Length: 138
Length: 389
View 1: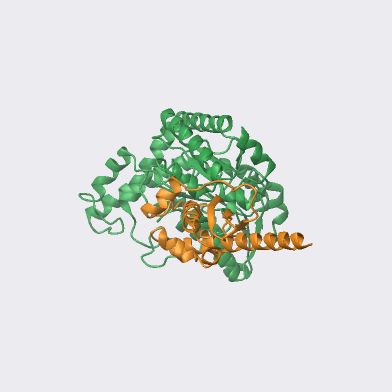
View 2 (view 1 turned 90 degrees about the vertical axis):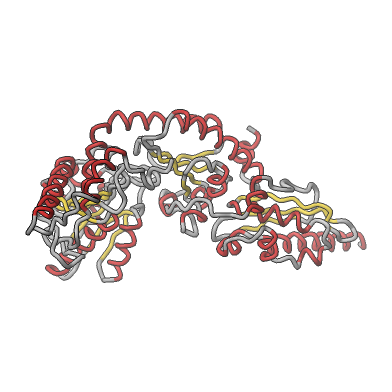
């Protein structure tokens, strides 16, 4: 055990770690996904409330992970709120890291799960919407 | 509260060392003048103090730059001597040794030394009988640590020593964490080699020693000026050696009282954690090192918890803080999950810690764990109960 201790994080990272935004779950939404980084064990659940127009009205997260993982999840929810699904699906981990004032390189790879979790949540939302549409037709 | 990692130099140790940086600066190897002879005399006095503390003979103590070097010298030195005389060598160790043992063992394996790495039970204990069964005709060394730096487990070194003695196989032990905390006597333990370090016992960094029984053959790893009976060339770190001896004396004087004090603090910390924080699991051995406590706070990642209680210097076995992608190899060797390794925090009490520290730490932990669990995606039934408690 090399006791490196917490890394030197930016003020924005520490702010989002200490005062995470939008913690929790959006109730009754199909736009929800949990992804995990199998290497370091970080796990993020993201849920979205999506308007019929395709605009994200609300985003909430739950995260098991390090300081960077929690801050990145919090930042992700702030960034996607108000976006349409296409723009949200195009958000990259690097953009999230940049919005946090930068992260140590190793942390960008292991702790920012934004891309995967957003796309998965949107995919789940669309496939549920597709099913609902088919059922409505039948 | 990270005293397994290092300790500050005690004031009396500092005082004892100071003259050897300035007025008493002689090189013990310079026997042609008084400065050198004086330094040599002081080094020999320190050697006697250390030998007496370990139950060894002075000539069996050799000075090194620290425990990593001592462990390297013990393993490589014995194995190479065995290879020179027998052509093959087998070494036995266990899965939760310090990296200076495990990485050295891995290197020896690449050099065609046969290696047995024994597992431990859930408390981190190696079964002495398994060591007996692992011995082969060409086993040249068994190395088992006295106490673990992460989980505090104290191995049955005495039983292993007896068994190795009967089989006529030398036993080495890494006593870095044990020294100053539990009795360390080479005769009682039945060990033929023992590594120790000064900076874990309130001495300076960069100095340590290897006890090596007079009949153990050791191939030197440092060649040069033939210091330390040619077993470890290099100018001796005189102030460091004086500091090591002084630190060992202090540790011996106060050990029992100080360790029961630290054990009481540790027990209070664990009792408080259990009482106030649900869904925690203690890693390691109950009744292990008196100053050690290792706990997995489930559903909370270690680095995040360290940051949330940052007034206290602690360490974690999480992937983020341990340089190990899957979390601490020690915690995982106990049969625990990766998630438990990521959630593990090590508390290492020391001389400066007080009841007030423990109380404040406990308050901080309760707040931090509650806060981080409220963020965590709780999925297991036990966690759901914990969340509601």
